[in-house]
Every structure is written in C-alpha cells, then in structure tokens.
Image 1 (cartoon, rainbow, N blue to C red):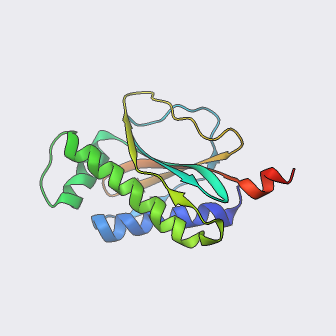
Image 2 (image 1 turned 135 degrees about the vertical axis):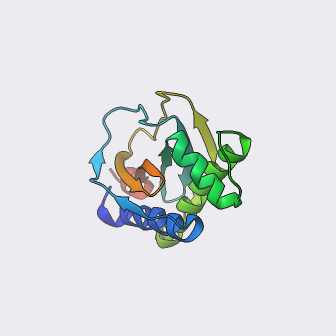
Image 3 (image 1 turned 180 degrees about the vertical axis):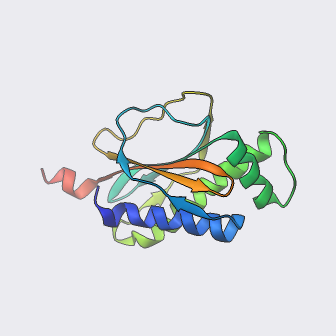
Length: 158
C-alpha cells in the first residue's frame, strides 16, 4: 500500500473526530501489522470492494467508544450498550466513506459496518492486502486505525 492510499483514511479520522465529535485526533507512527490481534475490545469494520478491495478497522477502547457515542448522540452515556456499538459502526462508516471519496479512481463500494467486540478479537483482511496500523491519541483516549487495501487491477496483471 502506498502513501496516497492510506492518507485519505488518516485525513478522514482526523476530520470525523474534529467535525462530528468535537475531539482532536493526533496521529502516531504508522506500522505494518504483523498479527491480527486488536489492542482494544471494540472494532468498527468496513469492507471495501471495486478496483481496490480491503478492510478498514477503527479499534477503540470502551472509554473512547462511550465518549464518541456520547458526542454523536448528544447524550451522556456511561457504558457500552447497543447505542454505543451502533455509533462505532456509524463512525467507521463515516471514515470509510470520506476516504472512499478521495479514492474515486478505484470505484470502491463500502459495505455496511460491522462491530466486533471482545478482548483479543481478530479480524481477517484480504490475503494480498498490506495491513497498515496507525495509532491515534484522541481527547477521548487512544485508538487505532487499521487499513488493508489491495489493488485488484495490479494483482490481476501479475
């Protein structure tokens, strides 16, 4: 995956947190993912298909998920419940949708969001996708963005 593929997702996280949650998200050091185990127990997952296929994951602590949902719903939530999980899915959807708009040359479709919970849960990415992980320090706490994207046309021509 090249910088021009990951940068729209980085901008989308920063923009979504700023505009939708009134929360600053500061990017950490980008790394290649080696294992599939998440750092935090809640993940919003979006699949991408088109001329590029892949997966986008926002991985959140319970604290970040509850605070983000509270901001989105304009209500003081105190624990992870269905509303919080729905908000995490919607946040993942917003991030993927914003990034997709910048990657229009790949004519991607965005799947409906899924939310996976549980300590140490795993998420499978397409087998040929380079998986990039980017930690963010937000005003609500830490979170991770994970993106795995494979260009279909490049893979088909090999």
